[in-house]
Image (cartoon, rainbow, N blue to C red; front, side, top):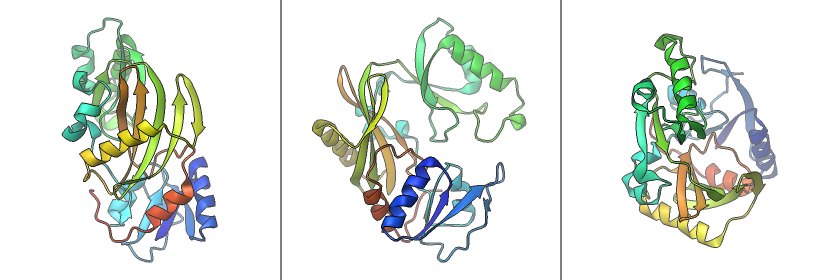
Length: 265
């Protein structure tokens, strides 16, 4: 497998694992708004290339027909098999950004909101309705062609759910239907990274994989412990998700085995 890395703190951690496994890789920068890489990589076999860095790398992978390239994923909220396990999934509200000022009541309530697509346009966060409406109006004040790439757009679909008290949050890395590594990344309000997971949380995650086995060849899934039990938070693109305290040796080894895998574009 040919590894192409964009220089970030996390990808430097991945490079350490690649070095230890004696797997070659190359460093590249992404040209803003263009999506080209500098220096341009020399592709040995387009069916055996994987890229890690920012989510926008998928554009380069798609344009150059690289496989597996970037493992793009479908919006997790549209996966009916996971609906019974989602955090507040049954009570979610979906609005495009342009509909927010008119359809989201400015009643002072707080909402957890995030884009439905795994596009990194806006991180998931809790804001009051007033703050959300103000944010929407700032974006809508721009003409659609003036919206910067990678930012919220007029037609960005957003998911709104009621804030829930969360005790622990974990990230798990799934490759070919198997959990290859995991990390705790939040406990209560404290952000902390440890290579650990509660046994029942691991079993819960395995159940999510069994419920939706054909979701993607490789992805990241976040789960949490709440007052009402274990819940699924979201999925993320494995090529652009933070590693926290994952076992990168295991992750790199599992992904290096991919060759000529068809992925959604």
